[in-house]
Length: 161
Image (cartoon, rainbow, N blue to C red; front, side):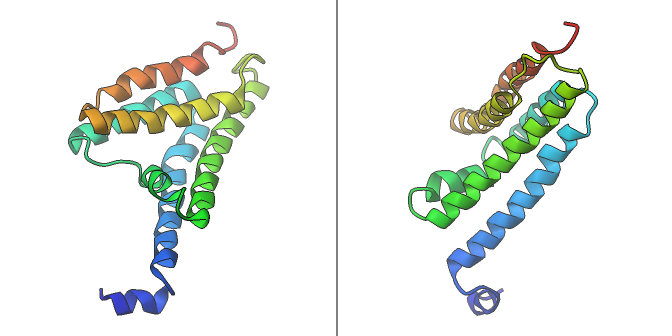
């Protein structure tokens, strides 16, 4: 596809980049947030998210990353529209996880001691941080270690524990 064809559909490179960002955000929501919400044991779904990432990153030599995270690091200080879009993505991800955890808490799966919002934000931060560590070290096993911690954040608040 030529630059002219692209600019026929998008008025600028920025508009094209935002369209790609929006596509990746939508895809990520369907792969990461919705599956956790549908699991009977959210702590196992969170652990599986890290296990899946470990396999993916091991398979590509830890040379890929989170597209949205990369955009966040590169563009947040340069372009307010990108910063807001990326911030919205991370907010939606954490809010989706938090809502799942709150539903589980209201059904008695987790104790009232669970801070659903803080736990969700910690899981998102651990996931994104694990990507950075795996890429910089070229070591996908970091996902296993960090994933166990992410799971433990939830396990410690299970009812009847």
